[in-house]
Image 1 (cartoon, rainbow, N blue to C red):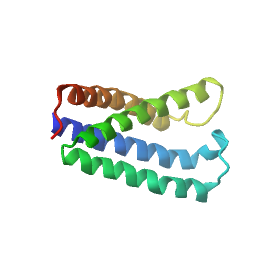
Image 2: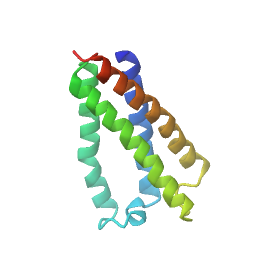
Image 3: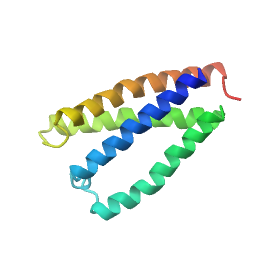
Image 4: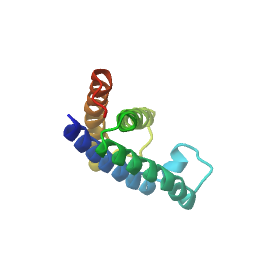
Length: 128
């Protein structure tokens, strides 16, 4: 089960980081009315990427904390999908390209599976 969780974590991280690259293209800071520009957006992402990679290390170690990080990453993916669909339905033109939508839908699918596997591991006590 840990191998599956590891690959779900890697795939979801890849999707979410790629989405964030797409977010910079669409100037997401304006969509969410953040008081930053491109430089601030990049600075915000430095600790986020570090935390995600730290979570990956914890998953590799089969730790309970790794399961929590995995669950959190899956939930972040679900929230990202939901927020962007909300803005698309409100008529915002951002993220409507086939690649942007494909990344968001893939994030939804992988996040659902990751949340399920993470919860299963937490409930059954698979942590080291």
